[in-house]
Amino acid sequence: MIGIRLFARTRRWLANVVIALATGILMLACGPLGYGVNPRGGYLVELTAQLPLLPAIAIAASSAASARVQERLAVRNLVAWRLAHVAVLSVIAAVIAGGTTLLLPAPAGLPPHSYAGLGSLALMRNVFALTGAALGGSFVFGPRLGWIVPMGWAILPFLAFTELTDDAPGLATLVLQPDDAFAPMIFALLVWGIGATVAATDPRGARPQKVSPGHGQGVL
View (spheres, rainbow, N blue to C red):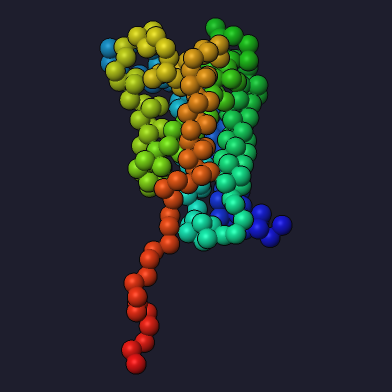
C-alpha cells in the first residue's frame, strides 16, 4: 500500500485528475466556440476539439517521474504499474471529455448528444490520440519538449488544408473528425498504444550515472 501511494505521488495522480476535470469545465464553457486558422479555409476549428491537449500533456509529463532512476534499480518490475498509470488516467480524462456532450443540449443544427460538432466518441478519441502523441513526443524529444508533437498535430494541419475533405483519411485533421470516422479512431488507438508502450517499458529512460573510480573517495 505504501508503494502504491508513493507511486501515485511521484506520478501526480491527483493533479492529473484535477486537470481532467478542469478540461471538462473548459469544454462546457467554450461550447461550440471555434476560430479560423487558415484564411482560405471554409471551416472553424472548435476549441473543444483541441482542449484534450491539456490532460494529454499532463499525463505525459507525469509519466516522466522524478524518481525514474530509483525505479530502474527497484526489485519489483514496474512496467505494469506504468502502463496502468497511463491507462487509468487516459480513461478518466476520456470519460470526462466525452461526458461533456451529455451535460448540455447540442447547439442548433447539431445532432443529439453532439457538442461543438463532435460527439462523445470523437472527444474520447482525441484524448487517446493526443495522449499517445505526447508520450511518443516525450520519448523522442524528452519530457520537456514532448508537448510539441500533440500540439503540432492539433494545430498545424489546419494551416495546410483549406477544407477538411482535403484530408481524405482524416488522420492529419483527426481532432475534428466525427464520431463515425473509422480510420481516425483506429489510428488514435494505435498512437495511444505505441505511446503507452514506450512510456511503460522506458527503453531509453533515465539511467544511473556511472561514478568514476576514486570519485567521492578521500585521499590517504
